[in-house]
Image (cartoon, helix red, strand yellow):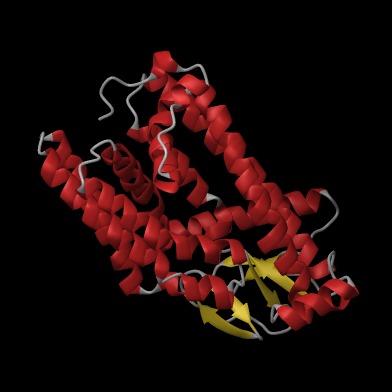
Amino acid sequence: MSAVPVTSGSLPVGGLESVVGGSVTPAVLSSPALDALAWVAIAGFFVAVVAQWRDQADLARLLAAGSWVVFGVFWLTMVPYYYYDAQSPLQTILALAALPLCAYTGYLLYGGRESLLLLSKAVALMGLIYLPAETIPFVRQWLIETTAMQAHLVMDLIAESPGLSEGANGYQSRFDFDPDETATGRTTYIVLACTGIGSMAIFGGLIAAVSAPLKRKLGAFALAIGVIWFLNLLRNVFIALASPHGWFQFDWLVSFMTTYMGAQPDRVSFLVAHNYIAQSLSVVALVGITFLVVRILPEILAPLEEVLFIISGTEYDLFEALGKEDARPDDWR
């Protein structure tokens, strides 16, 4: 979700955007070059999956290793946007960490850690879910406008009915608060990141990648998507109300963020609600959803073990730790 002064109007611009200082700045994610970079990485992962399926393990590892490096470069290019435009410390740190972690994953694959092909397969499937939403205009528009309408309906139920108008992204996604009736004179509009598609893609990819009975996979998927949708709806409503009504416009906080973090005074409530409270709680939510999904589909512990190894360099047996040894896959492919 992006914040915009309600008095400034909106300039239609395709893709994910952020408004800083009253001017519309398209996010770098919307550039064709970066979209192509992401597609190259995901395509490489898929080719590696095919090679592994054809018992060409060495070729699969090499293809996946190269794809991980490209994937890391893609996330590195996102750092300027997260730091300067989104002003999100968490996303900036994660984007910075992505390249060394992805490069290390590629190194491990090149060195023979074949089990990482399962994680590579999961990332390929995540990309297959997410990238069409990012790169196909009518899919992106439907997701954004549907999410905006749902958030508006909830606000209407709690006696807040600002209406919807065209946001800076050209979609009916802007909460049309009256600037004379709000504390900050600002409002927000829904962007693709506000739809929850990123988190849905993560769980969709993990669930689709592992071998398990279809009934349990569908149950785990329905649970994950349902919880993500509900929590994301609450998140959007919270941010949409906190920003115009200035829920966090405390003098000491405004002074600190404007002096040391370069924030605009009237944007403080948005930044606190979006970049600190909502994003921190999102991490907690992802952990909680993972725990719920594991109860239905413990097979996803296999790629999660690989993630822990990449981060820590230590082998963890999550199946044993959680008493799910019966679900350990004999063939991780």
